[in-house]
Image 1: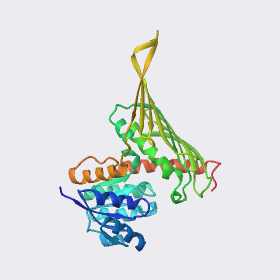
Image 2 (image 1 turned 90 degrees about the horizontal axis):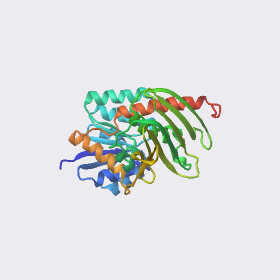
Image 3 (image 1 turned 135 degrees about the vertical axis):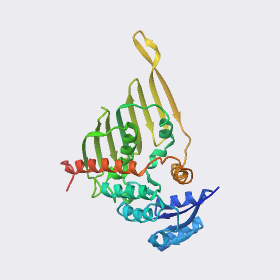
Image 4 (image 1 turned 90 degrees about the vertical axis):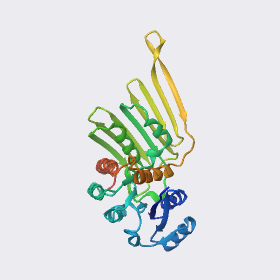
Length: 317
């Protein structure tokens, strides 16, 4: 099996896991890891048996694919340079800080004929991947993504940190233009918005009510989908999928029976699945699961929601 020469740019908390996955895959050759901290780069390089680099520019034109796991403000500049050198790019979410930057990355990727994939990891959740094989026509969607406070995640607000996962999933599921948005939120423990709610109305009539918090006492990642004759619940945290449908028989005269199907999936490595899909797109021309266009679309909606939240009275300016 031919291998792809890869590198990971930024090997902090998340990037080191990217490096470990590449190092373990037979169709990837992890040639280097990059971090501005020489100690961190050296530690991860030693663990993954590859070269440690402190300046990513040393690798331009020398690797075939990269994962970029640096702070969001650096995504555009680093991804742009690798794309311009004909390198395939997997960039962590959100794709960039502005829609204009995302559009430019997509333009370059198209011109250079290279893969641009965005790290919306929840798309590789086993329960959601099973749901993707079913016929979907949502009328109403409700999602809750709640988490305790973690100081390391405060470089972006909760919409770009957590809610964007559900925004991406919902946009992919509904596949209709957004007609209108309403949103509100509040700052609680950080200088950015920590809890937010958004109502997304689509041109096809579907409505999504999305809540995200990073100041909760519990962790919850659930989505409930209502469509004609069916109610579907996805538990991302526990990889559970419940499907309730109107049956063919009657429970009582004039009252249809409700059939229920509940599935739980074994714990899987979503990050590994994401990187395997990235390499499959590079090596075999497989469809890109979360394309640069998907990342741009999710970012655009997330920014619109953020702007609405910042206008709400609860948020300090």
